[in-house]
Length: 239
Image (cartoon, rainbow, N blue to C red; front, side, top):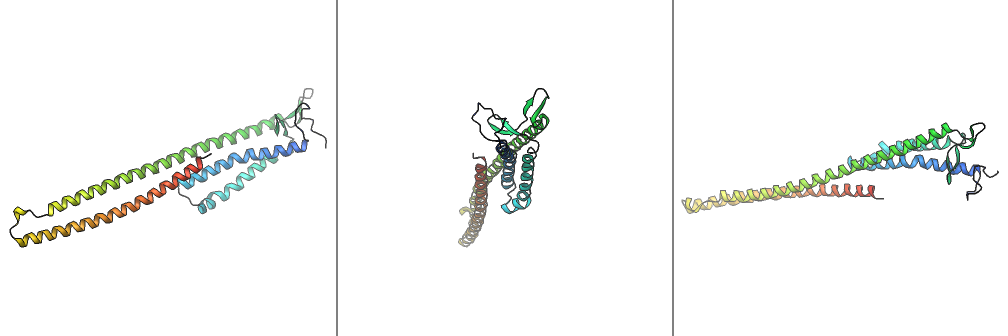
């Protein structure tokens, strides 16, 4: 096969029409699939972080459907230009463009201006739509992580406040239940009142300790979830 006539003799480009079409095919395939897969990956992180979807659920309800859609669309958009002779030299590589314009016939030797404009329009719609979608998903992930961290901070502050109030109430209860020396009528009443006061103090302390353990356990689980969400967000936003 002869060298392509659409390669300038002054350039360093070498190849044939077939190699140009092959190069343009793979460039178009990646141009269509990469933005869509970036959007799909962003959506996967969003479902995992925002709604706590596990890998099995993501695969069953999202991933198993998105792969055929993206691949079918990308291969379709890469195959159609082949019979239309749209893969031609485009700057320093081969891509979709009309080539070989004839001033006398006012036609292109390969491809048409209308087909070129249609595919270029589809390209810009796909790229900019995916870019806007990725930006929106990143913002939603940021807000979800921020909300989770704020809830964790408020919960910890509330737990500490409840613990402090519980301790104060325990101390106040002990003071109220402690019998006054001036009101003692006999040694027997003093012993009885002192015994009841001690029992009440022990019961309050036991209840307070059990409540503290439960609050600390819940706070620990929330902290673990916060760290997991923050880690996944960092993995997504890392270059």
